[in-house]
Length: 398
Ligand SMILES: Nc1ncnc2c1ncn2[C@@H]1O[C@H](COP(=O)(O)OP(=O)(O)O)[C@@H](O)[C@H]1O
Ligand SMILES: [Mg+2]
Image (tube, rainbow, N blue to C red; front, side, top):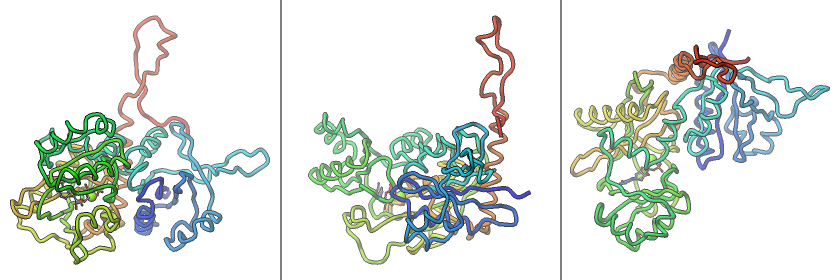
């Protein structure tokens, strides 16, 4: 019997459209001799739809028409119920007959409400096997402050930074400016902690610009990070595949900027760049680096994946100082654009094999989780003595 895979994409995120592209690439790559694919599109309003028409990017030009040709669906937050139900039940008594029974979910939701662990929490509640990072790793990977804290604590090089909340900025602005100037000095990069695609990111070369950048960043997030700016920046990306115990790293890519020299304001604030949308941009694969630097970057990418407890496929973005050749881990993308398939193809893993591996990893994690005790089967209220025996994380109803 074929395994049924639901690919979830779209979502309430600034990276909605990029997710539609990534998911369609992924669905096209899934081997249909082994798997049945159920697309589940989450609209910008957060409603879920399924239908074959979702499998052609061209159909998204007219969303109203597309949705009229699809079926709105939902899953119940009930442990062990893997069914996809139609939102509008047909039939005499309006009972919801499942449209499909899902075996594995592959979330291809970039950015907020997807890559940050929120959607993974829904899947954990249902107990359905799913590809990619769990709630904890997703949330840690998405927050640029928490991520850097964890990496630094494990000895992985990250740039120096100062972080604070928007309320602290209002209450203790002078103190924070003094700390930034003393610890980092100019130039600095200012970022909202939990966005992607360079939204709200700015570069400051003096105090006036710093204040302007922070006032911009706080429009997007309550948490703000100010970082040492890496000069003569060379950016290198490396994908990692597996789980925290066993993983492989890909070849390296160097995204190439489009040729014209953009100012930092253009690049970071003018909406000209989107590193997930780089399927259209040029890149050098493999990156042209000496062997020792290549090995070091691959090692650091693997360490980042391991330390954050990642799973499935992630892409680690590294910054190299063009003069000193110092290497810093910048960020991890736990649901990378295009699932970084092009980096695996360069390493001899076909896109269809990548999808196959993601499914197998999801099922493996479910098996491992099911062996753990999650609650006790005895009703402690009904007994006088101690508690014996435990309930494993096995599937409940189905
Ligand atoms: N500390 C830094 N020094 C120099 N450039 C940086 C620094 N941090 C980020 N950048 C530049 O800004 C871009 C976006 O920053 P990043 O942290 O990757 O955010 P996003 O999640 O929006 O991709 C990077 O790709 C890089 O070009
Ligand atoms: Mg980035």
